[in-house]
Amino acid sequence: MPLRPLPEPVVYVGLDYVPPVDFCNEQQICGAGSHHRVVELDPRTGWVLPHWFCKRHVDHAERVAEQVREQNAAAPEPIPNRGGLLPAYFKAPWEEVYRHYAPASWKPPSYGLSADDWPDPGNPPPARSPRPLRAV
Image 1 (cartoon, rainbow, N blue to C red):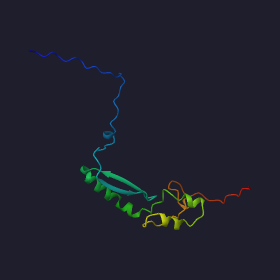
Image 2: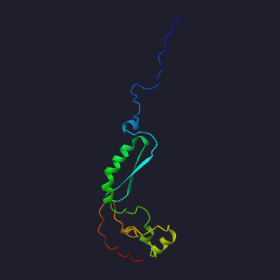
Image 3: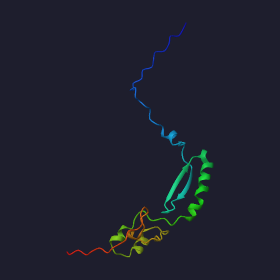
Image 4: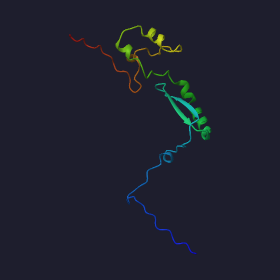
């Protein structure tokens, strides 16, 4: 007995429809779970930039780790990116306070405890002028 032909499929999209771009293929992302981490240190700020690789791309992870090895050795101590506001506004023995409440491994940042003393990672530090006193 001959089979009858299937009916034409019904498509409910407009004629100008373009399917969305698959970002995994567009950006060449594997999509597998990450397993290996390679740490890159920003040469200006010393901040950590992690790169993650799956088990299938171990060779690529090793190549990237070799590429950033010298850069990581020359990177500066990280600029703090949190805290430092209380010492900027209130006078207190902040190092003693931090030592009391922080973990035993805490040590003061080399840039100082106050955020006013830290360099701005995007811009050179502005020239500081003394603030005029206001009459109360």
